[in-house]
Length: 451
Image (cartoon, rainbow, N blue to C red):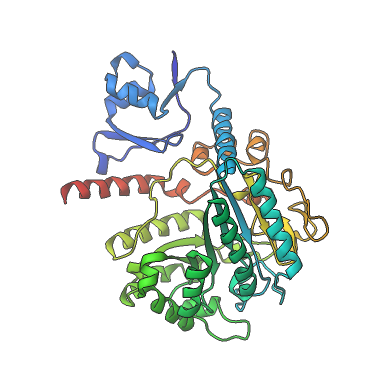
């Protein structure tokens, strides 16, 4: 068979660190090889008889070399579609927004909050819809995954209790795995509630947003009545992460949203978390503030290049600390960028609306838009299979995104289809710091060998 050099390769040449070597990174397989410059030139020139057999086999196996006739873009997108279809048979994933309310008034939030929680009718219709889908996949289904989101989902605790109890019982009856996680501001997350969520409702993964030390967080994530939230959240977290239940059964992922106002405080915040005995029990990651609805948050945002630089600084800080560092420094092959490409994943809000992206509900910009599939109160048989963005992979070759010509497509799958639909480039941070990521991982590997 004749081969060609894949166009999905990123090359790193850094004489200061690599001397006379070059690193080739295949974004199709998420693997890298380091070779001398002379061999690198032979690889690029397809001088296959001059390449050691073991390396040549590795180049084919890890898709540095691909069949000469192959349309790589079509092959990648086809692989993505097949992988998602297979996942859809095995796992049902839903995002449930039990409440449209939230105690906080974050300036960058795109939602309009109301004192609305799921009614009994919406709860029953949501449950029935999940059952119907489960029964249609009964021969292959293995796992039901629920994400609780808001608003602030804990303001809809009764709905969480109602649905969790029924869904757990249903999964036990059908011998299916059940898992759930929650995106929460942690204001209401006292230990007693945490214990109930873990033991009774099997909520074991928690994402909690804290935007820096008290001085910075309280200027950004304040209560709607103007009160501060930082001390309450930290007190709740400290009590929980030091408990036996947490350390055996649960995990916290601390998210820090950054823009120009707080980006320079992130390292101090990590120091604070470590000093308070929190960092060693949690994961930590950054997220750039982005436009959500009509909030125009990126006016105060950092550029993608600035965020990418800060991200590397944070990685290095976490590696030097006691953090439970779980971040994948080098990105891996991604076949499912988000839930919209899954034919079975759906979002249910407190009004009974069905969508495929969790930034749509409660966001006025998208009211009565094509991003909604429908409402189960009006039509319990709402069809979400053809709602906008579902066909994302088939759209990429002809749409206005840059994805079709980007060598990083296999690592992100387009990242956020909704952003592209809103004419916002969705390129992930690793596109701007991939060299630093790969060289950092190389250093980590070298230190592991020496230790």
